[in-house]
Length: 202
Figure 1: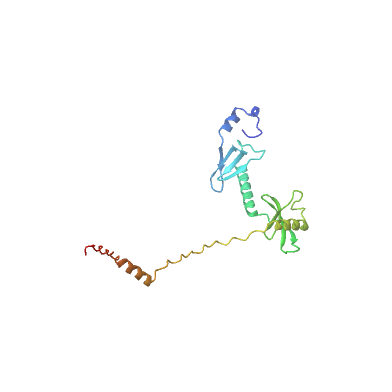
Figure 2: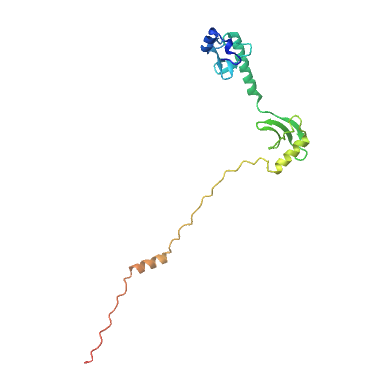
């Protein structure tokens, strides 16, 4: 059931109508594709292709007409296009850094407001906003951040691995090779037997 609709206000015809949702409101005049009306997670809506537009408080999902549905769809499409062109927050320029030069700006970021200068970002304390921060306050925050290592690191150079060259094995000199060959070819010396002892009778 749509939000805000009390059970006591639902009669049989309305209940049957809600059960029949989503319903086709009509064809879009530009491309002839159907525009549907239904009740979703965020309340009553009209839908054309991938564009969903919520119904206003005075619109009834069971009776909203084609003209009204087309207006809601085109308004939602226009908001999407404007949001896409807006891009990132350019920030509020406070002036040049007194010591280093270059613009100092304050912005609203994903994690809260911050001051920025030359790649260094410093979060604003809770008592400051981008609209009330002065150049002196921003510079003090940025200098403190830079002292703590807030400077963006330069892109790391690709690591090159030097080719390791193994020392060539020491080759035996021709002389030592020939010496080993001659020693291997030389047969071992034969052992000579000692003569037998002479007899006492001779």
